[in-house]
Image (cartoon, rainbow, N blue to C red):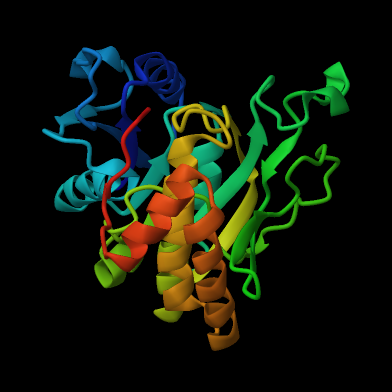
Length: 306
């Protein structure tokens, strides 16, 4: 029997993690054994979970002795899963709600083509977590798109979620190759991970998913959007909300790291110019992010919660 491992990071998010696990426990994928790996990133809140919490699938709990971030935290789960014989690994945010068939549909898509490396589902905003809450009627809630494929603007080095803020009326219901897959939820194949070895831990948080997507494509793998797989996202809960100081720091620093590696020369020059402007006139943690890029302070870097 083939196996799917689901990697979930907990970092001071016990309530969300337990809700997500409860939903996973209702999922059955015919012909596959599903195992859940929860990695606690040295949470300050007391968090422990017994394997008996899940009734229908094995549960592995790993506690890190420090916060390894999204990238290396999930690498811990990936390494465990591969050592245990995983055929597929699903990277999943703990702040998500799940359709019962979301894993089945991801695996079904992956099984069609051995050249596929990464697949992402259709992701809606969970009700009440939309960017523009006053834009939608009650009947629209739960059907507002957060991700329906990823598009890269290489001129400005900005990744965009296709369909974001749109109400889903079936306009993104075609399975197709995409620019990148969001780390909120991504299926990774064993074949891919034998070639690219997971996330780059320098990113710590943000852009690591896009970097992995680009490395997958460079190795000749396809990355796909699979709309029949569906989840809901409590957007930016674990990051302190959109526009937080944490986002200011990591998005600013990691956009530099990503852009200077992957973007065309013209965009690199523009990015360098923008970095000088931010270094002089950006917000506090934008300035620190730029400084840390030039000082090569990656991983967790110098960010501290205020």
